[in-house]
Length: 325
Image 1 (spheres, rainbow, N blue to C red):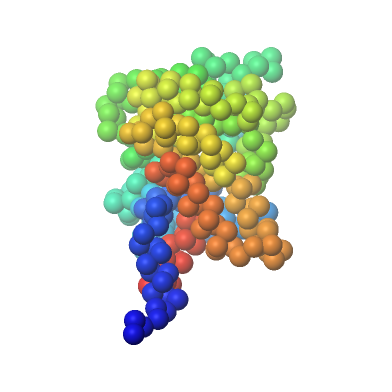
Image 2 (cartoon, rainbow, N blue to C red):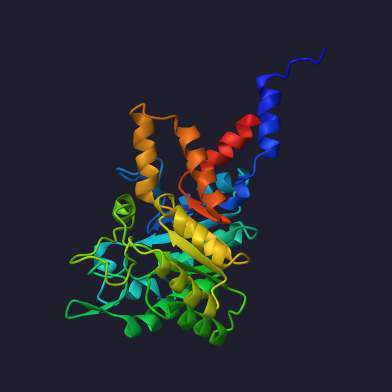
């Protein structure tokens, strides 16, 4: 008589033949970096996410690497007295993220280090570009984004990620990288970045909320899907190596449309702070099992067509895999 399989054996079989296989290699873990030393401060309203000074950042990354995560994304957070109209703290030679990249690459040369390229966290008005008379000036912003990207590349960044949603930003950065001799640096464009209600915890963490108005004049209308294809097409034409959809959970249809249109393109999706905290809070209130919910959502993001998932849950996923062995 054929012996009955254990539930564990059945699970192994189901895992082996599942159409979508999620792995730790799909994840990028984001970090928020601040000036100072010996800083590891929990961010209010953003469970499990911290502000790190560069020294403590490197200590935490040691655990991240040990868990098998091979890529991180760095965001700089500066004090209000360091901010100005043009976000100059973002692209000085001694900029916070440039120093962080150098420290991380010196200690973890094998790690893929990505950096956010945007001015919002460095400007006193909180917008992603140059502002004049309350209007964001697209073309005048491009040189500042380009200088920021070059500063990061020279410090050792493997991937620069322009998130300002300025038209032509990828092309401007690609040209600047080539002039600076940083041809090997890859570009991950925030190609389809929507004006979303899910960014709240991030804006608190990055101190990047706009001081006036909103970002709907340069971020995408969430009612539009075909526009995402046009934005992605433009970034690919401007030689982006990776294109991104942000947010992820509420935009699975957009991810799938891009995958169908560009089957060979590397696609990333950002499971953003509000999406993350919705699941966290649901689990805290007994509405779902946290790990099961994050697994389901992360798998759905990959199933829709992504290669890369930027997620605050990445380390927990890696721990879960380790416990299952």
